[in-house]
Image (cartoon, rainbow, N blue to C red):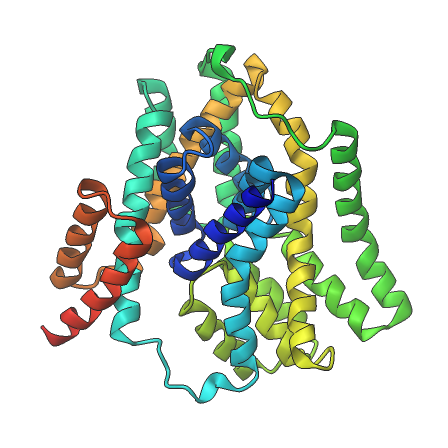
Amino acid sequence: MLNRFVEVFLVALRLGFTSFGGPTAHIGYFRDEYVGRRKWLPEQEFADLVALCQMLPGPASSQLGIAIGTIRAGRIGGILAWIGFTMPSAIALILFAYGVSTVEDVSDAPWLAGVKIAVVPVVAVAALSMAKTLCPDRTTATIAIAATAAMLLVPDAAWQFAVIAAGAIAGLAVIKTDTSGAETQKSSSSRSFGGVLIGIFFVLLIGLPILSESLDEFELEVFSGFYTSGSLVFGGGHVVLPLLEAEVVESGWVSADSFIAGYGAAQAIPGPLFTFSSYLGTDSGVFTPLWLGGLFALGAIFLPSFLLIWGALPFWTQLRSSQRFRNALAGVNAAVVGLLVSALYTPVWTSSIKAAEDLALAAVLYALLAVWKLPAWLVVVIAAGGGYVLEWL
């Protein structure tokens, strides 16, 4: 079991160093690593976990990593997967908060432009691969196309949840799946324990703001603010920004200029955007030494993810064998494919492809990833170099 713990941590650590592009791209990296290369779980189960993480509030890619680590090596595996994926960016942002802002601004660096272009083929490969598996007929393909159109017409995080719910309703109404192959890996938790964790999630969500108001303790107020932000976000890391701004800027913990500088740094590094909290916790000065405040905020914003994933998994593995539930899940999975396709256009394509030269580099990277089967992290490295080539053209 020790070897499995080490394996889960090291694989997640490599993903933490190389996963650029936000939660949508992270899903592509995860699929390439966990399904394609290591075959830790089949495509269908991976897609089901993606659907679960899309339906829960919080950072979808981080929750997906926690779920896969938990399935692979129990709850310790889930913690190790989170540490590996999260700590590279968290440490970088803590250092930035200590004063690394004197380093040259990288927002317009050629290597970063190349890395952003690499996200296009990564998401495209993920969307195509998942479409082949999850949209095998006209019905599921139609649901996916409808979801794509809905998200492109109304690109809003709250609308994303509505699209997923509509996919579930459509699945119940028009899809009939075969449950004969719906065997699942055994959950490491009982349903009663899962229910307790979900109960703790809601108790903290309701009770922490009340408690912090009553006790007027700065540390408790900070913990409550980050926990609430991590509990109320649907649609990926970027959606947490207005919540965090309301918590830390309007309260005076962090200045507006410092908040913007930290957000810029968070955009330039791999890993989940939720690690922005480590920068804010460090800069707020909630603890001495300052880095302890960064880890405090990081733990607070991710705690809801652990409670929800570990609470939901015992029910999830049993629900997947239900005919009606799998019908609904098939609709959700088709809708998730639609969300991936819409994200491929915006924000991925619109923020990365600005000229014909950018499209040329994206095409080369797609060939390396889809035809030559190079690992995603190596394609990202090549893309960084390609950014300098585009700068010279």
